[in-house]
Image 1 (cartoon, helix red, strand yellow):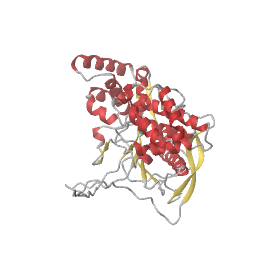
Image 2 (cartoon, rainbow, N blue to C red; image 1 turned 45 degrees about the horizontal axis):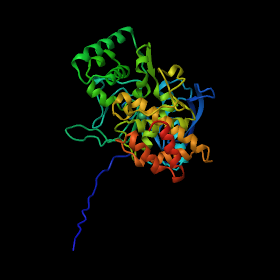
Image 3 (cartoon, helix red, strand yellow; image 1 turned 90 degrees about the horizontal axis):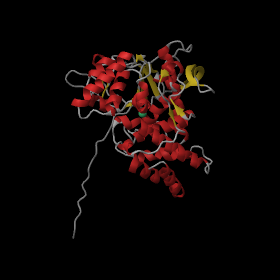
Image 4 (spheres, rainbow, N blue to C red; image 1 turned 135 degrees about the horizontal axis):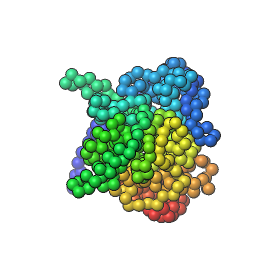
Length: 409
Ligand SMILES: [Zn+2]
């Protein structure tokens, strides 16, 4: 007789999370935030911020908005004149819109989200913040995982929950000198450095754009940057248009004031129960972009930025993109175009469902479920179609396969 031993493994995959902030009374406070108007321009408007614990600061049941690398809650300024308050209120408003959308499709936010406005430090997964003397960052948005903190060797860093960082804009001049430095970089690397390629140029450029000192970054080596900047918002928006960017004069991005960017980051946060925010992939970026267009009811991302940013190109969900094997190469330079493909194919499938289903959120409900069939290593080629097949009902499998086929997958 065969005897089977069951080995019980106790997994301790606990992560730190911050509880929602409970109070006897929650306040709705009217203030000023930036929203898109009927012509899709970003303008100031009077809005209501719900679920606040006090009437004068952005500390709520679901979100707390803090300044830079401190735990100082940002005050409400109803005039909209204080820029930090305006950024914080705008983020709070669009995060709430995203939360309510997810609630409407049956997804509840279960943990408190901290949002940092204007933070310049780089993130450190153990120590939370790197010292700013080690470099500052601007023009970027990112969702970070929680950490346990450190309480030994006289270091006292508290545990933190999930966070979204919305950095300050900074105009970076793309001067003739800057362009010249690039050409020299390319020339100097080609004969000596075998791993130099197009991605490297992209990364060096992006590094320069998010740092306060382009020259420093251009001189630094690319491999470590390649890892950290593959998780970066800017790369997603700019990578495909990099050559054009080298002909532009300036770059800046005020991420807290751009609704689609805030909603995109919230999507990373709310999907992080299955897809941790440690690395961005074309599938994760494409999903976040898809939900950003859906929730803000826009077909484009980071368009008509006005004074809030200068980009070479926005991302358009209506623009059809054909699958290319390079999207799955894992190289950061392909993250943008891979995400554009995922956004475009999900949008196509959504329009297909809309012809037959009355529920306008039929597609987003299914697409949200897809995260359970994906990991941070998932490739578009096999895993996206497999996840779609697992998420869509049998009656739609053939038509979804046909759509994937038409787009080259
Ligand atoms: Zn993202």
